[in-house]
Length: 178
Image (cartoon, rainbow, N blue to C red):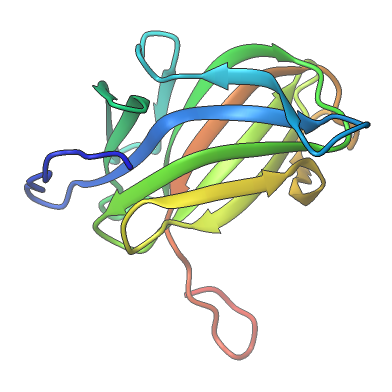
């Protein structure tokens, strides 16, 4: 269990915490054990690039816990739609791979997007709602990622992994977005 101090939220800033580590694990063919393909322990933040819609705010920090590092994303979307971070990687993702991490969020109910960007600019992603109650274990299988845009619809060698926080949209009965 990860113990962190209570975070005081000032103004409209809300936070998303990704704890312990993020890893890709692949199930071995002959057993139920998983082999780690990629791991980031969030000890440093210098390799993460920040992006934001004009008028939104984002700040990154990291800290250590008993289980490893914690990446903290403080953000204020204001009236804007998104903030994002990306990190260069060099990954070949194959069948039976799952992305695993722990997450805690404070503040508003928004979306958390996980993105894989390959060498030709193809973006594959998965969108979940930010958890609203305590630390949550998140596991997303590779086949749950969809082609979103750019490049082509084939996931090649992944050159960047990204996370984004976007506004949760409410759908009206006629299918339009509010």
